[in-house]
Image (cartoon, rainbow, N blue to C red; front, side):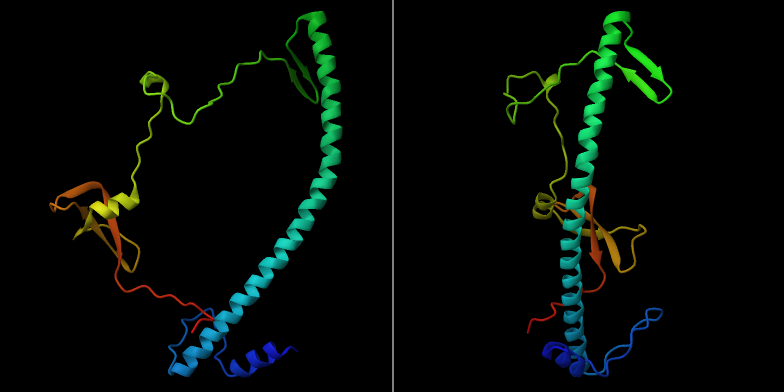
Length: 193
């Protein structure tokens, strides 16, 4: 057992057992709160170690899969070229563009030209019918130019209220609402003092 594990065991010795079927009891002292946050930090370290191990194993599995499937993909491409050669020769002889086989269908289709965009934004003189304009809300700008208005009588998740968004003149901005927590939010930054 490492010194860190020994220290963890000593600090966490008499913490209440986890009972996921019931709400946790409220802690009685600052010492219990500190030791519980210590345990949360320990759980986060363990989760990070698990994620690192999984990442390494996943990389190994991905490399194996790429290796074995690479062999299959190369054979598949080779066999596909075989069938394509036969289909093209058959088309030259018969004019047939499609052949149904018990194992699947072979088909020759006219290649369509593909549009490639070479500049990010079209010039201003390009006709509107060739340009797509996407309008969407900019949430940062909405926060800057509106504020929380009156509460709205709508169904919301527990612990929240919904309010209209109003501009500086107090007018409601249609299409925007604010979801407001009823209580202050809580966070833990374990391992920091």
